[in-house]
Structure formats: structure tokens, C-alpha cells
Amino acid sequence: MAAELPGELVADLFRRESGRLVAALTRVLGPAHLALAEDVVQDALVSAMQAWRFGLPRDPVAWILQVARNRAIDLLRRDRRLAALRPALESEREMAAALAPDADPANQLAMMFSICDEALAMETHVTLILRLLCGLSAAEIARAFLVDTQTIDRRLHRGRARLQELGRLADVSAADEARARRPSVLRALYLLFNEGYHGSDARHPLHPAMCADALRLVELMLASPATGGPDGHALAALFCLSSARLPTRLDNDGAFVPLVEQDRARWDRALIERGVLHLSQAATGDELTRWHLEAGIACEHTLAPSVAETDWRRIVDLYDALLAQAPGPIVAMNRAVAIAELRGLDAGREALRALEGDEKLSRYTFYFAARADIERRAGKRAEARRLYERALDLARSRAERLVFQKKIAELEK
Amino acid sequence: MPKFMYIFRGGAAVAPGLSPAEMQAHLQKWYLWADALAKQGRHPGGNPVERSGKTIRGTDRVVTDGPYAEAKDLVTGALILEAASLDEATELALACPVFEYGGSVEVRPIVAQEL
Image 1 (cartoon, rainbow over the protein chains, first blue to last red):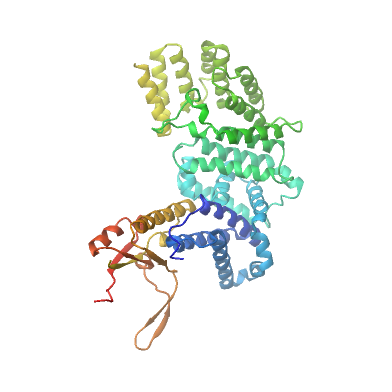
Image 2 (cartoon, helix red, strand yellow):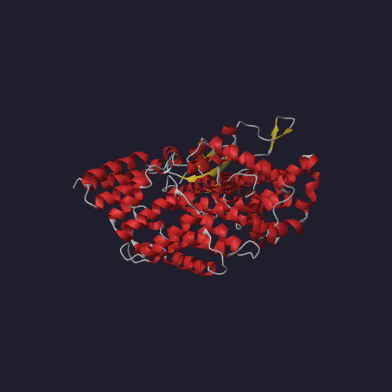
């Protein structure tokens, strides 16, 4: 082993194996023993980190698996109350079946659908998905959500307690059970994606990874007939079309780049094509979900050659439909921004001002940035400056602060 | 060229609560460090050791379980490499990732067998 310096580690191997093995072991041991599964996987990963420092084993994935399994058997031997679980772990055939790569989709879907339990809050769903399926620590989740680690620990505690009450993980091959839970699973993945996309610290490497994980998990659902469906394709389309623009969202200084200034030639063509394909598959069936509408909006933006050549009529129509289905201040704000492009700055200003009293928008940095943009374009420098400064006060990250500082500096030229 | 042994104690393997992403990032640092040593022709060869083991002590050869050192003193691996002097070997060890999570390195010259 020492001779094989240095190693070539697959990107995200530890995180991926964490999610894969926790799901697989929880399926074998039952959700009552979730804590045991998590401990065993954590131990196996620490062993791998320790053992691989001077070179990688020939098959790293098999290595971790073997260590996790041995560790689990070891723990079960020491605790007589757990003796009933031993046959499943010691049976070569059962273990091989549960841990084979082709069992991964079923294991992870079972875990994901169990997590999105009606008794748990939406943010607990996302927190559990990040912890159990994406391998993030409580501290990393806390950083992503801008809350303290204790809050995340409390959510994890509630979620684990609920999972432990379940006798078994959700049966995702049963169409009824899967169908009933699908909306809340999609909603959780949407939040997961948004946290990665609009997260407070976009320079943190885990944020694009969260977007990639959300896409991976929704495509996992689509691969199975019981969990897939047009709404899942719509959400996957939204993820692809938005992710395609990730490479241009920050400039070299780490400042957030507004859509109008993004270099469209650098958008990811392969992801755009994948998104368009998902969108066409989403068009089957007669349901028009909010994911369809949001994907439609993302598609208009992504396929347009420039902001000026964007079909704003269609985007406003899609926002109107979205507002009817999922009313909310951020959607209304984005619609108002589209109105400015379609009907001119005065109409846009009026639409944005109409939202002024909203409590959420009064703390939302991009609301003031949107109003500032309109005043800047209308030549009202003093008003634009005042609004950019307001946006600057509310900015949550360096990327946001930098762009507003740049805008203020440009006004003074 | 003279050979030196690095004896590693503590570090990431005994640090509590590392996330999978942190573990992988830490491991990458070891590869970068070892890679740099190899490229300088220092022929680094390391071996990790497990946490558990046995200790045999005294003329009675009493066998006990485990090294039972405190986490920070627990030997977690060793590496042999070539360097011009103890000072140079010490300098090279300063860049070792073991310090990221509070570990230590003992640098020991290996006694030359030939005169």
C-alpha cells in the first residue's frame, strides 16, 4: 500500500459513500437502529481517512464497505439486545444484495421518502436529507442555513426520533405510498437546491454540491416508475436550467453577477440540453405544477440570447400563473421585475412599489436592488444610491455586498 | 542520503466529529504533501496503524490490550524519507497536514548501518 503514492480520490467519495451506506445499513437494520448505522459509517470513514493517508487501496469503495460491515457485526456481538439483527449482517447473500450498487437507488429512495414524513416540518425534511443522504455534518448544514448548530441538532433529533418510531422504511415500490409522499419529497429537494443556489456563502464549495445533490436525488426518483412523474421532470428541468448558469453567477472577485451582465457563452450547454429534455418529458399528463411554471421561466431565461431578446410577455404570463398557484412576495417581486422589461421602467417601478409594505421583502436585499436598478436606469442617481445602500445593509454575503458596492461606485462616475 | 523517520501522533483520526467532506479534504492534503516529497526524490514511504493493538512489557512479557495513550499521544502512523540533515527533515515536516487537527510529528534520524 505504501508504494502507491499518491492517491487519486474520486470527488465527493466520502460524502457519497456516507449517504449510500447510511441508507443501505438502515434498510438492513431497520430505522429503529438509524443511530447505529450512522455511527458505524462515521467510524468506517474515519478509519479510511486514517488508513489511506499514505496511499489508496485498490478498491476504496469496497474497503469502506468491508470496514463498516465488520464494525457493525462487532457492535452487534457486544450488545445482546441487538443479537436478533446479526443474521442479516452476517448473511453474505443478504448483505451483498442490500449493499450492491444496483440496490442504491431503492435504498436511497426508501430513506428519502421516509424522511419526508407528514409529522415532520419541511425544514426538518431538508435537514435530514442533507445529513443522511448527502453526508453533511450538523455544523455544515447550520452554515448553509445561517442558523446555529444547536437548531440543526434539534431538528436532527426530532427527525431521528420519528424515523426510529417507524418499523420499516417507506416502501417506494408501492405506488400509493410513493404517490402520497411525492409532493413533499419534491418540495424538500426544491429547498435543498435553493439553499445551494441562493445560499448565503456561494463561495463555499458545498453549495454547488447541494445543487448537484438535489439534481441527483430527483433523477433517482425519475428512474423508478413508482416515484417518477411529470412533476419530477419539471423540477429536474428547473435544477438543470438553473445549474447551467452557476459558472457565471460570481465574477473573479467573488461578486455576485446580475443576469444582464452574465456571459451567456459560459453557460453549461450539456445541462441546458438535459433541462430541455426533462421539460419535454414534464409535458406529459394534464397537471401543471408550480415546478412546471418555474422550469418554464428558467427555460425562457436560459434559452434567450440576451436580456433584451428575452420573451418577457411569456415570462410575465408564467409568473401570473405561478402567483395564482403559489402566491408569495418573492414571486410577486420577480414578476414586477419582468413587468419593467415588458412595459417599461415606470410600470416596473409601480409594480415594485406596490409590494413595499410586505414584511418579508422589507428584509430582502434583492427587493431593494431591483428597485435601485430601475432608478439607475431611469437616471435617478440619488434615489438609486439610497436604494443600493439599503440593499447593501441587508446583504447576507460578501458576494452580495461586493455587487452593491460596485453599483454605488459606478453611480459616482 | 540520510534517512529519517516521522512518527505521527494524534491528528484527524482522533479528532471528534469530522464531516465526510472535511475528511476527504484532509486526506487530499496528505496526498499533496507526500506527492511534493516524492517529486523531490525523497522516497517517502508511510504506514498507518490502527487505533487498537497490544502491548507486551517487562521480563514477564505481560501482554495488555491496546496502547491506551491519550488521544493526542496515540501513535497514528510513521513515515520514512530521505533528507540531507535533521534540520531539513524537520523543515519538511512543518508542512505535514497532521497539524491541521492538533497532531504532532516526532522526527528521528535513522542510524546508518554502513560506516
